[in-house]
Length: 119
Image 1 (cartoon, rainbow, N blue to C red):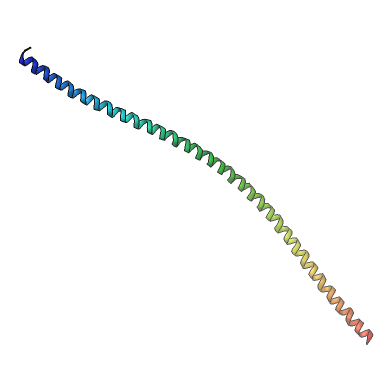
Image 2: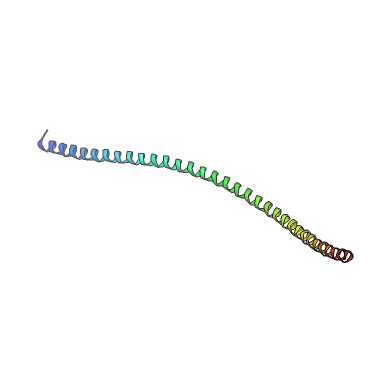
């Protein structure tokens, strides 16, 4: 081989080695990206699972809110009935108080008559 051929061969080998080094770095970068993507996929699966759990929890909460709302409607109806009952009871108490007042007045008059008849 001539000196020129050896020099050309050496230059080609250096260029090939440089290219091979770049290729190795590119492969390493691709592997790093693949690992990142795999981690992201794992994180995404975990996030998706958490979201499904949160969605189920929200559905349960929504059901509880509907139940509470129905209970409140029932309680409101019961309170209206109780209020009506209290109104009727108040009327009865007023009537009894008036009756007692009349009975006291009558007893007072009877005692006065008795006192006059004894005197």
